[in-house]
Length: 296
Image (cartoon, rainbow, N blue to C red):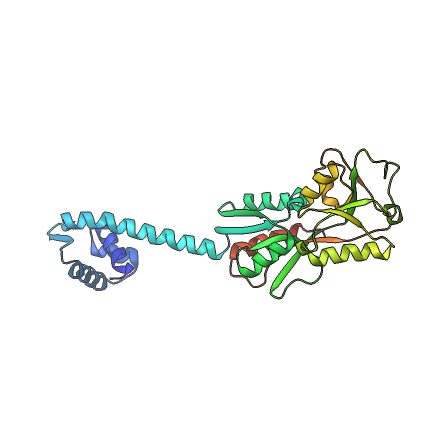
């Protein structure tokens, strides 16, 4: 049995005429009659009564008509769903993000715009640091993620530039340091610092310490915390200062003041990273939107 058997049967049942069905379907009458006969043989029941006034559905035919319509409706719905998924208009995206990246306008605007333009693609957002995201993307646990890229991306992972941040000094509000304005690296010698362990993001850790060393500064690291949120909480508790992503200015913690660094720079390019040549069409929709929104 094939779908055309059901379509021919439904046309004949609704029009009560093989001739009328033939004209509607642009199929010869003998072909339609043969398909109806094949269908009845396969079912093992008569679907029509042949009367002098034309065809009339049997009780079995009435029941079969209802089910046949349901089957074709489900097939048509499945076809539409498959086409929409192939076009990236339906589906599911798992996207990672560094928390402070979501505070910037372009990231939140991109997520909001995507939901508006492609409402049938659901977004699963997972906060992770950059190395965790890159590992998850490579392993297929994420479709993509907003990462602060330092160094070369792993093989097979592509990136779309979103914006570039830099670093800023965070100090306890009670400190006098920086109250007059930006500070130079030389002024930070001997000050207690809070940092993250190197294992969290080795390439960024090394880049930061190298930038400090270029200015003759060796950070006196007294405490370590694995996230910038935790680091800033320790700054707030007056445990020390910290060099953090300037994106934290979007959501300043209590009792913490941010100070510009005159001669210390560690560029932090934010990129949306994803598997190159991935099979998820919804991901391509998201990447295209970001490319359009990213600053030229």
